Image (cartoon, rainbow, N blue to C red; front, side, top):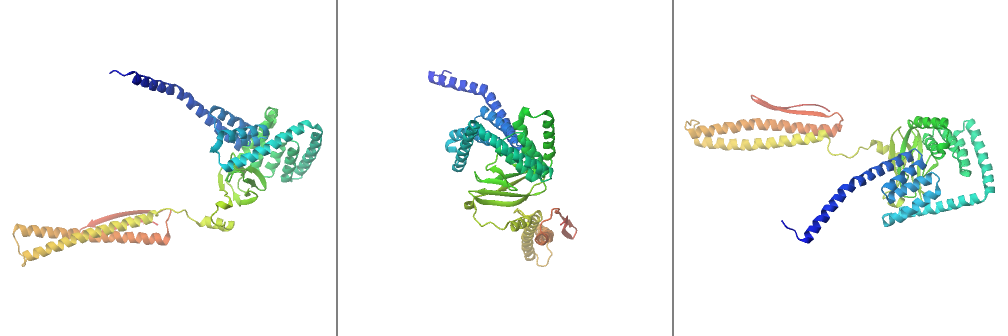
Length: 435
């Protein structure tokens, strides 16, 4: 077969494209796999409070497979790690690359974060240019630290944590995160303790002594057995707090760790209005998912929380028929069908009986046609005698099953077995089961 020049060029182009795809796709797939692994690692590190390391993982994921969505996660992690300039750059790149694909609400929130970060970066530059203000900050930070140590020694652990956090706010120091973690752990606020310890290891990095690193890693492993997680879905920019402590703005990069087995006050506010305020309890190792919506998205007024919880406990999820009800309807329908069959055969038997009586008024017919008609009549009668009682028994059983289901409801241990039987001169249905 001969091809013209255009056909041949087309075939060559197809072959080259196929070869290129074959050779290049494995590398592309490998990069995608590595990017996914880096992204998952970033999420895991973020959950552990190791935000700087999480940012590094997200940065690697974006290098392998650039995506504006990864840039958003990078910005969140950099901001949580206190690296304001890096967070600012990530958010600006996110808006530039995301373009129209970013929702208006998300863009509004990120714009607000960019403004905040710009002010923080400017403040850092001013602080560098004015060492005298640093001296004053150091004095105030030391005073807050000393108050924290005193409160810790007196067993006022929550107050101690607040003083340590205040000292860190005034004069940031990675060493203070160890004090914060110890105070939070002593106060049984294990989620906050894990986050503080994680931040200590992340920011301290190689400056953390081997002894302290081992101690903190053991503490994190111990505390992880005593925490659960809260995953909050809320409008972008909504402020989320647990037990009166701000845990950031939605969307959060990962679920919030909290102490398991105790009551926690979850509050979510949007534009200075509380859209969720609930008492929650989390089991160890599990994640509770909570959803908060803007008031304009709520079609009906919210019920009183206590009533909602009480009703939720009693409510059963809407499902289809129970097994018992389904068996009842199937059994009843089968019985009705058999009864209908018996009615048909009975009608035929009566018709043939009438024909036989007309043909043999004296009931003495010996010709083959009359004998055949007699046999047919008896056969139809026998079938009718079997179908009607069996159908009636099965239909009655179905009705009984429906009554039992209506009275007692569905049981977790329902087990029903139906067995029809026939014998000489009798027929019926046996039922076995527990309700």
